Image (tube, rainbow, N blue to C red):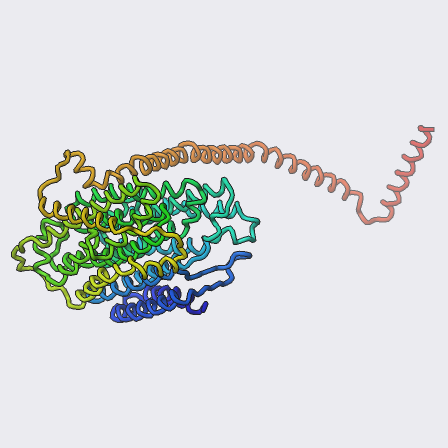
Length: 619
């Protein structure tokens, strides 16, 4: 059983590293290798989801490396591998042979493998390993076209923002260690054991996990990095922002639900942050004139529902929302990428009639957009009501906020559809979309329809049992009808409104179009003070520390010169005088040493005479 789990994570990681190591020499074989690996990983994930294997290997003293698959991680593993396979199928047809395909497919596999490590990790250290590799590979994928400075700058912004939030996991790990029985005890670092920590460590752990999760899932106030991430290739957006990186934070909050509940405050903070993100980023999506920016803001808003579910304890609804969103959003991003390749634009006014020009792509896009809008009988309609039932049980105000976010979902989805289905304009220079890039979209469209089934009994009850989420509230018929009616009303209103400007003040419209000014706020509140502090530290280093070191060195040189001029001369003079005196005494001592016996006898007589005189005088 452990071999199955090791193979699940090692296969994409190893293949990704191999493709990256071989480089351009593997460009021709890279798509085939990546597809074979992704298909194999999907088969392993499905098997693991049914068998629930565990694996353990030595890592540190008293801290082994542990992986495990349960109901939640099994569903996520299947979702990740399935979306990865479909996205790679699209990429194999859409990515031209002139690109560095080995690097692209290698990074995609490495990213998917790190996500699998993240969802199967049983302890914080293993989670951190997958979390860090996922962040690094996302930076490389967003900046895949690294010769464009704007793309690399966008990748840097996304990486630095998420890395700042990731520090929360290190805070959580440190607090968990501090709360444990000793340095060799790893039970305190188990994800399932975090809720057993005592105060104040429990609050530190909760705060660290919440900050890291909100940052990775682009929730308020970290949402702006997802806007920058749209600079990457469309398949990257489809994978990173549908079933992997941005849902990793939501997954972590769903996984650590007992921790949020035990803290006494974490669940409320998480639930209301998710609700606020669903509403405010929904308004941001409505204000966008760029299709990928609209989809990016909608990703933040839709993940807000998952975060709301984690705070409300609606694990089943949050998980169903995550899976359904993965299918719909990956389809929307891939369709946007196909239109960008064919038409050379992603601006909504320039996409008029795009769905009419490419009927199959347009139909698939429509299915996903209607699912995102929450229209029956599509998957996100039912999944959203399952999680909102949990919100209603917790607070009617939270439920109302969720309904408001669902209403906005229908508005921005209908807005996108209005543009792409307007009467087509002449497009003589439009490129043909490869057939190999179309049928993965059809598969995802079918998934948007089929995934409505798990939201209803008896499949929903089976999902709850697999997630060990007993006692989950079930939505009533009126809740399904209410959300469907609101979605229809919102979609109809948005369609009738069309492309007319929003009835808002210019400043408000500019604020929503600029993603609430979050990036500028981050620069004002964090980046600018940090840079000023760095410049002050550099000036202190140059003007104080450097000058102190240089002054000390100059004083040392002057002391050495004075020592050389004065002390050394005096010492040399003294040594020279002693040496001269010694030589003089030596010359005087050598004079009596003639080697003649009569002279030695005369010297002895003289010496005894002097001795005798002395003795006589002394006595």
